Amino acid sequence: MRRSLTLVFAVVAVSFVLAVGVAGTANPGKAVQGRGMATDTGLLAVASHAVTPSRVIAVVPSVAGARLRPLDARTLAPLRPGWSRAVGWSKEPGLQPAVLSPSGSRIAVVVGPSGSESVVVLDTATGRVVKRYVHPGDTSSGVYWLGGDGTAGSKAALLVAVGGTWRGTEFTVVGSENADDYEVGDPAGSLREGLVLVWSPTTLGVWGDGLGGSYGNLIDFDLPRMPLSAPFHVVTDIAHDRLFAISSAGLVARIDHLFGTPEPDFGGRKPAVSYHRVALNGRPFEAAWAGSGKIALWGQDGLGTIDIRTWRTRAVAPGVTGVVATPFGLAAWTHDPAEGLSVYRPDGSRRLRVLAGKRIQAARAVGSYLYADTDTNTRYSVNLRTGKVTGPLPNNAEIIAPTLVPIP
Image 1 (tube, rainbow, N blue to C red):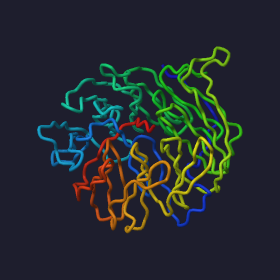
Image 2 (cartoon, rainbow, N blue to C red):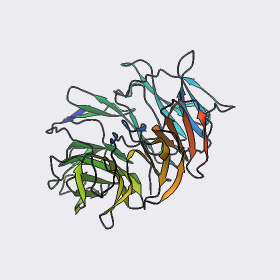
Image 3 (tube, rainbow, N blue to C red):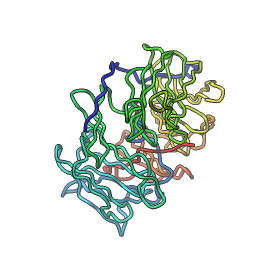
Image 4 (tube, one colour):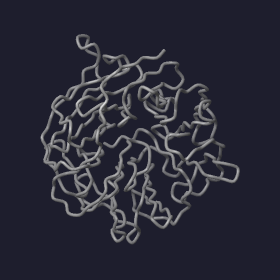
């Protein structure tokens, strides 16, 4: 069964920065919540503190083809004893994706040629297949793992396949025959029970299986006070099931109670929306939830934060070109190799400074480790708890991250 909703689609600019007087210039990156890699031209990823620190799961190339295998989290060497599984893998973004469960005990990977792919769920400790979905839906834009791990003592897993249609984007609960398609782009973020959709700065929604919104699986809501023309970004706070829609014109909409009890008179769930004025400068920016009541923003003027208790802004560091938000702090770097990589607390103080003399181009965080790639085609692991650096390491592994990373 397929349900459709037609809404006016608007292209949304997803960039901006604080008006806090931070010196220097930087090119903001594109943010993708929960999956991907943070680069000064690319993606934002966040770390999961629940994944076993001694192990990461990665796709590693070999003469016989790409293989999924566990690696030592510090050295990225194959674990012994370990396991491996051949996978059909494409480096083209959005094809043949893999994603970890929230705790890291399971991994879902798309295998097989496009058009006849299936989704296989493996136990990350043993490599054993625990579930196979022969008709998962269109996975061309990725698979998202919401809910829990689906194991004993955990919430049920919610695997969502996302693909493109002539109408826009299709969402399918893997293992079901139901698909919804909307005139909207790829998800702008993830929450524990759904994916965040943006039609325009004034029209947002959360899609999830059986959410009971006014359109069945979609909770949609309007933000009529948000400016339409200013750079705009949506930040998800997974730990508290809330959203922040931020306009560089100086307005933040806070959206709470997304997953409360449906209200019969509303026809579904009705989120609580409040608006707050903040001192922003109208420029393009990127943003992420930093934890401890702070939103991190970065762009041409550097890195700063918004305190959601006072709605005041604070400058943190100039010249920042890339950020990874983790439960251990904000990992940030600039174009200047002398700066290396710094990890800042949500209050703006610096916890760690490592890799001085290395020009960082990209980073990814999983568990308590951050993996930094440099402009000399080398990779280093950084223990985010201790600051210990290991490397250079093999940089050909595609390290898999979870969709959901709660940052308190």
